[in-house]
Image (cartoon, rainbow, N blue to C red; front, side, top):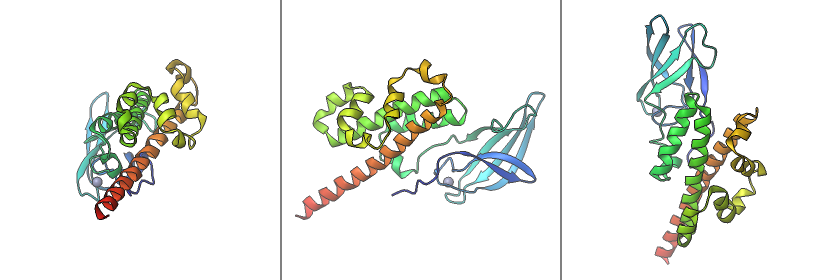
Length: 224
Ligand SMILES: [Zn+2]
């Protein structure tokens, strides 16, 4: 099973007596890393004061760029702009088990959040969760595929994942049922985002265990 201890986050990074904001994971391989700086390139005009860090991942050895804006009126953590390449999951084992449809939307959601588009990220995470939950329900109940595809996320969770749902607070169902204007104005909005993300992480692990169980059962059948 993949080691998935730490969440993706922006962290402080000291280089040449300057503090940068970078990601704690490599955008190529998604592993927790402490990257090595290759060089820093400054870019400046009247409006922007950008520094581009060229970094190398100690694990996959691939290079990438992180852009920070050092303009005076940019407060922490908005100093972080983006990475090239964008954050991806090409080598993440848990995500590799999922459908392309899930991977595409989930990657877009993560990158939206990194860019600070939290509302779009929130919708993206909920829809990603829906795709994942339905994909798992179809794996477990292939004959019910049509019902699963035509039900909404809440119905699918309640009908096909009721045992898993016990692990989550009622809060998740509440968040899924509430409308955007209701929760968006509340101060707890960001904790709702992390609840949905935790739920995605849980179902990614659940899917991995399910696939392992299926392959063990197949092997046992072949050996018998
Ligand atoms: Zn890497």
